[in-house]
Image (cartoon, rainbow, N blue to C red; front, top):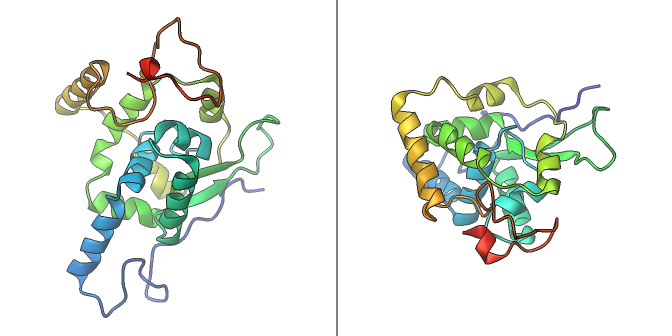
Length: 212
């Protein structure tokens, strides 16, 4: 049995373009797409999934990473799905434990094509490095390590990190240094190695001194 959900296909002639029909000028479609992707909450969601080490994130992981409440995140995930940028993928394999998540959010083939057009994919190595240096609660770590469904091959290939050149390595170092000093925080989660005197229960609000 396949353990992946079919993702929406790239818009084709028989399928409505998510950002306008034939009567809309290409430049207007580009403007609409850019405005849609850069809306604050959706922008954070896109960054979180681009930086995810497994390419697929649960709603709980997104709630941990994105500085918005759960209902707002869910609303914008639905909008991303309506525009065929993202889809909900369901794991149907038998390797998951009883409490492991089964539903994950990831990009569609069309979504990856769109993000590549707007140069989002060039930042995947930096976003991945930032996420790998975050403090994770036991619950979020369990979600990150849970078995996942297969993504379309073109999506998983696009999100693989190529050999990192010196320029990208320097950008990563600068981003990590900025985060360590409390600046340039892209994700609503504390850096790795939080204060040892601070304990955070799963599902609890994280104290301010743990976030900065």
